[in-house]
Length: 464
Image 1 (cartoon, rainbow, N blue to C red):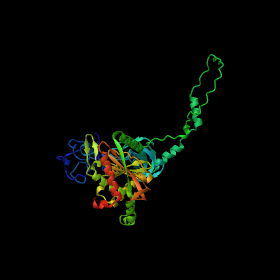
Image 2 (image 1 turned 90 degrees about the vertical axis):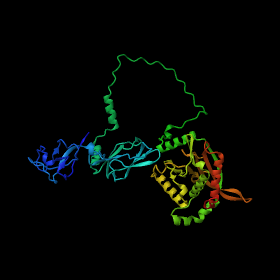
Image 3 (image 1 turned 135 degrees about the vertical axis):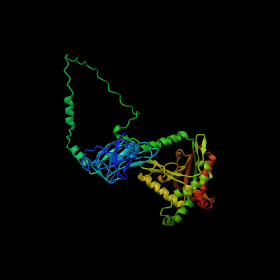
Image 4 (image 1 turned 45 degrees about the vertical axis):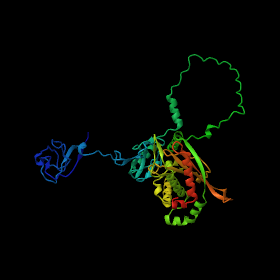
């Protein structure tokens, strides 16, 4: 229990039913000094202040103030000032709140070093979590005085990682003190350590004479068939990032949980490519975003999910949860790992809205500014390996979803059209699904619907 001193103007001559004129505290202070009243009856009065004169009495003058010692737990809630230290010049940079499902992270790297100038809200370090990378911003403008945590350490929200001097004087003094401190060379350290080690006394008896050793036989040469391992100095060992470990664990859990099966189909991209070519300029002029193939496949997947709602469902224990909404997850590869942002309520969007949302999420994923909320959820995933040149693959389900669609590269191949062999731009598509919930019939019908919509986009307009 601690006490606090609070002031307020007295606007009435009555305090808890007692007139201030009847209270005669003992004041041994001069004019303009403050007195602390600790008399009975003031336990539950909010604090006030007054000025008393030597030998005077308290009156009912509203201009006078009373300073009272009260128990702060009754009226005053303790406040914690974030990022502050005991010194008014120093402030602490701490790890911010990282999300409901994230309890800790790894301090990936410091963006600023001691002695460098930082501005308010400027990132000074990066925290790597299982899902995203979070910046630790400077609470005040100043100079980095000291780094508390180390790179690679596991930190929690509220952990202090650095101290910042608002004036920069403390950081300058610390740097100068570090330079003034004498640094001993390795040779001096070695000489000092040798002096501290006591020398061994000579033995009292002479050591026994060594006996003649038999000549050792040379070791047999390595057989030609014996594998020669590369030297260790040509290898590099780097710890896995938290994001990479998270992805690895989720994918392995997916293999251990789902009864995964993959079915394939191929799509003639002629009509969708012609649609894009005919309207791409007008689309950019009106909507300010380029028309790509991704929006066409998202719309086709939405139509297929509405025709086969079981693909949009998920197993939960002994129950099946059917979703009446469609949140499409788009797999995006970044230098730090795979992230899957979500296009929410995609069934309500048109082509332009889908393209804008995908471009915005992909940009955030690339620069590391995407949030956890933008990756949470999702009912169905689309992975486009064709942008990297993949011809065919079997994608892995993104838990807790039940299926994933894999797109691949467009390759001109000879196809028979109307009895004639012609060159057509073709794409293989793959659907990996949880066979515990989705049968082969529904999976084939699902891919067939995507094929029909992409090959003839007019079906979306007519809903056939």
